[in-house]
Amino acid sequence: MFRRTAVVALATTLYTAFSLPAHSQSSTQISDNLNQLPNIPLKNFPTVILTPEVINQFSAAGTPLPSTARVGQEIRPEDIFHIGNLEPFGLSDANLATLAQLGSVSLQQLSMDDLLQVFGQVTLEKLLQPDVLPQLREMTISEIPALQALLNSGNLTELGTVGSISPTTQVQTLLQEVPALGKISFDQISAQQLQQLQVTEAIPGLTQIPIGNIEGVEALPIRSLSALNVPALSLGQMPKPMRLVNGIQIGVADVALGDPTVGDAEQQRLRVISGGIKSKDKKLTAVRCPSNNCPHFEFSLPSGGEHNGAAWMDGKTQVPDGFGILCKPWGCKGPAGNHPFGSGVRVQLRNIDQTQGTAQVSLSFAYCRRIPFVGKSCTPWIFPLPEGIPIGTVREATLVPFSPPQRFD
Image 1: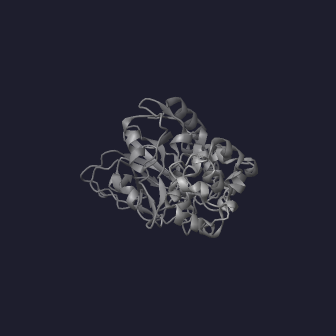
Image 2 (image 1 turned 90 degrees about the vertical axis):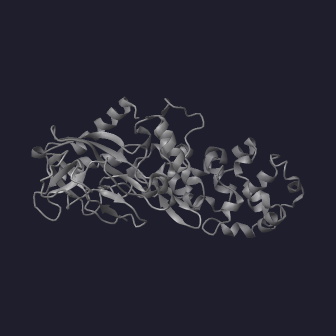
C-alpha cells in the first residue's frame, strides 16, 4: 500500500505525461512532457506502507527489508528500491568510482565505514572469483590494507592462528592455512579502523569493478549507497539513463473495453501491444487475451499502421514474465504492460473502466541479479507491488506513448 500523499505528489509531477488533451498537444510536445518522468529523484518516489503481502514478496525475492520493519510501518523508497531493481539502468554494472562521479562525491574522502553495507557483502572468497579480483590471490596481506586490518581487528578470536601469520604471506597461502577466513566479511574490521580505511585504498582494484559482480550486493537497498548520493539520483541520471526507446509510437486511447461481448469479431485481441519479458534478451513479448473477457484499451494511430487498433491489456491480466530461478516463486507470471522506456520499468493500465473510459497508470519494476554459475535472472515486473506505483489516469482521447513489442538493449 502506497502512502496517499506521496502518491499524489508524484502523480501531480507526472500527470501531464499521461493525461494531456489530444486536441491541444502534438506528439512532440507529449514526448517532451514524458521526459519529466526520468527526472524524478529516487528518494522522491512514494513511501510504502508495509503489509504482509509486501513483506512476503520481498522475502521471496531475497531482498531484505530493514530488520526493524513491521506491518503497518512506512518504508521509504531508499529501502524499497534495491540495486537489482535498477539493473536495467546499469546500476549493477557500474563501479564505485562511476557512482561517485554521478553523485558528485569525492570517493577519496569516503571510508569503508561510509559503505558498510557494501563491505558487509565482501569476503575474500567472493573477491577471488574470476569476474571480480582474482589477481588478489598473488598479493600479500600487507598490500591489501583492509585484509591486514581484518586480521588485526581482534574480532577473529575463533581463528586463533591468524595472529601469527606474516604480513608478507600471499593471499592464496593464507587461505590454504586458514580456509575459514575466506567467508568472513570485511565489516568485521573494528569500527575505528573502518573509519580510517579509505575506500580507494582498502582493497586494490575494488572501486573499478562492477558492484553487481560481488555476490550479494544486488540484494542491497539503494540506501546502502547513500554516501555516493545514489538515492538522490533520478532514473535519467543512472549509468544507462532512462529514456524513451527507439521506435516509440504515440497512440490515441480510443476505446476502453471492460467486458467484450461474445460476438466481438476479435475476442482474443489478435493485435496486442502489452505483454511480458520472459527471457534474458529483454524482449517484450505481446500476449493475447486467453478468453473473450480481458479488460483493455484500444489505441489508434493517426497514420494507421500495424498497431492501429491494437489492445493494451489491463495489468490484472497475467502473462509469462521474468526468467531464471528468481521468477519461479510467482510461477514466472506477471502483470501485462508496455515498456515505452525500455526493460527497466513497466507501464501498466489498471482498473480499466469501460463506462468512464479511464484507467489508472502505474509503474512496476523487476528485481534482477546474477546467479553464480547460472547467470542473470529476473523476477516478474512486480515491484514494489504487482499493481505498481500509481502515477495518474489515462482517458479516452488521450495521447499515450507505447513501444511495439521488441527486444530492448
